[in-house]
Length: 267
Image 1 (tube, rainbow, N blue to C red):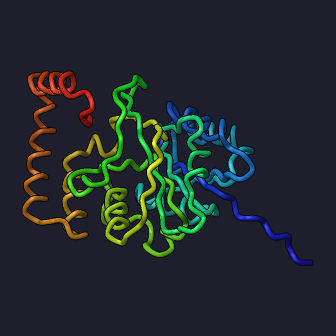
Image 2 (image 1 turned 135 degrees about the vertical axis):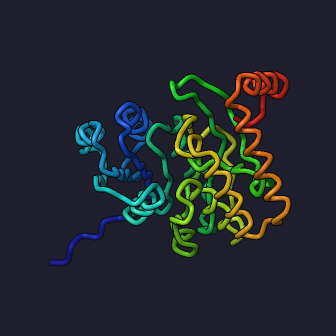
Image 3 (image 1 turned 90 degrees about the vertical axis):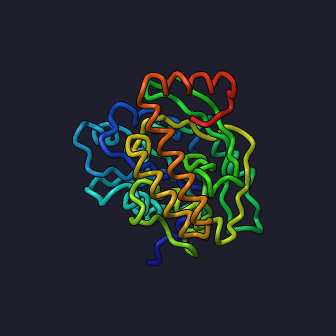
C-alpha cells in the first residue's frame, strides 16, 4: 500500500529552549493563537531540567514536532529545528520572545510566488526581562555591517535559502544569526520588509550577557563577508567601550539622557 502524500506546510515556526520554564508558555501561546493547519510548530529542547519539558508535554498535542536532548549550543539547536521543519518558509522564535498577533498571516501576504530566495522581516519591540516595554525598532538594512540592524525574531526564511547557503555556523556560538544574515546579504538574498511589529524580544539574553563575545563575533563575521577591516575593528572597540561604561551609574545616566533626546535610539 502506497502511503498517503502529506502536503508540505506553508510555514514552520521553530522554538529552541533550554531551561525556560518561566517564559516558554508566552512563547508557545503566541504561536498557538495564530496557528492553523498550514502552520507547523517545531520545538527543540536542549535537555531542560527546570520543568520546561513538563510544560511542553502539556501542549504536545498542539506541537508538530518535539524533541528534548542535549545539544552543542544554540546554533546546533537552530540547525536541528531547521532540519526538522517541513515548511516552505521557516521562522525561529526563541523561548522568552513572542510573535505579535497576525505576524504569521503577514508573512503569507508578503510572499512573492516568483521569488524563493528571500527573507521576510519586520519591526521588533524590545522588552525588559520582566516583560515591561522598552522601545520599538525598525530594521535598517544599510547598517548591517555596523551592527545587527535586522532582527532575527522577525525573520522568516524561505527554505531555498537554507538549502543554497547552509544553516547556522557553530564558529559563531553567540552571534550565529548575525553571521547568517551577513552571508545572506553577501549572496544577494532578497530581504522583504513587512511594515509592522512582527515580534517581541526580551533584553538580557545570551548576546546581552556575553556582549564582548557577541561584538567580537559580529566583527569577525563582517570582515569575513567583506566589510572593511579597519573601520570594522574601530567600530568594535567603540561599541565595547560604550557598553562597558553602562556598567557604571554615570554611564547609565548618560544613556537615559540619550534615550530622552533620541527616543528612537537602539537599546
